[in-house]
Length: 211
Picture (tube, rainbow, N blue to C red):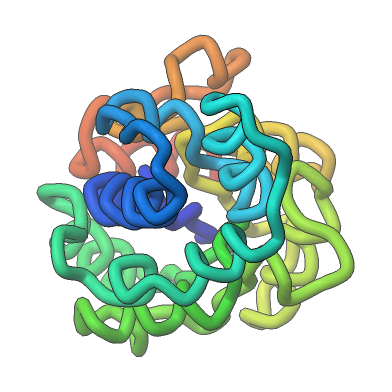
């Protein structure tokens, strides 16, 4: 089972929000609200940087991108935590024999550091970041490469995510997807995928997709 990271496993928006506001604050720009930053998450750090700069009438600046990637809150869990029920459902899925992996558009280094800081790094057979392979979600090869690194095959895999990129990558790879309602993407992004209202719903939904 391959999970998205931000908005699916982890409620990381508060730390991303703080980091974004630090980057733009150094440039004398007005801060964003938490909800505004949540709406920008899901397409990787470069697109996030483009969005928060464009929202303040600024052109893309590589220095802003680099500052965001290096920000301590992006790499650690000062405000970030697993969504309620995630730890328990991961244990339940492992007990059922599922191998777990992460496929995220966040750069691999910060993703690994963030998971390690929460004591979750050892639970995943592979972590495919946005810079791990030549392409990233929604390209299906990002999901395929992550799955291969975890020792899995599409015929027995399931993708779990909160963004259209997860749904599109899964569709392109021929893998069923479960959309999570607790994340940052609106339900319309599910595009017909089954929706889990809470983490505890995942095992039951998975059983209907991969009995």
